[in-house]
Image 1 (cartoon, rainbow, N blue to C red):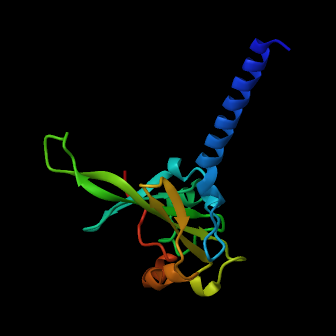
Image 2 (image 1 turned 60 degrees about the vertical axis):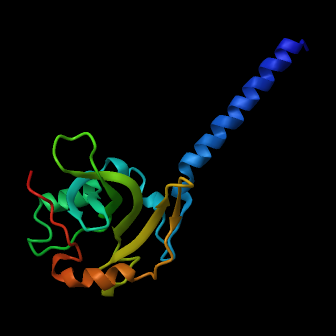
Length: 178
């Protein structure tokens, strides 16, 4: 075999290893599973889900997004119509540390460093009726390492807060008028 052919094979092999490693790194977050058994992969595509609402605390900017099943339920009047969200409904609260915009000609906070994805999944067969059939998980993001980790919060940690809106099927944020 000519040295040029060997060199071409070596280059192609290095390229394949590099591309394979990049693909594994890009998919790493989807291998995470919360202590309650919720897989981050169940929320694949959340980056493109429709916006439900937004919120702001002193510490974080929040954008609440939902999958098409949940968006359709909102449009059908859930939970105001007295019906619960259907199984398969998923919602994610994406949180960023805010910063002041240096570009806008007015004072406005904009997202800076992504902090975490708080997710909820409705599955009345899998999750407790005491929790409304919802499962909760938190996936934290560490910017320095560019890695997600499953938060070690107890399985029912979301219920403790969300029980305050039990009458709205455990959902704080309504689908905002547009």
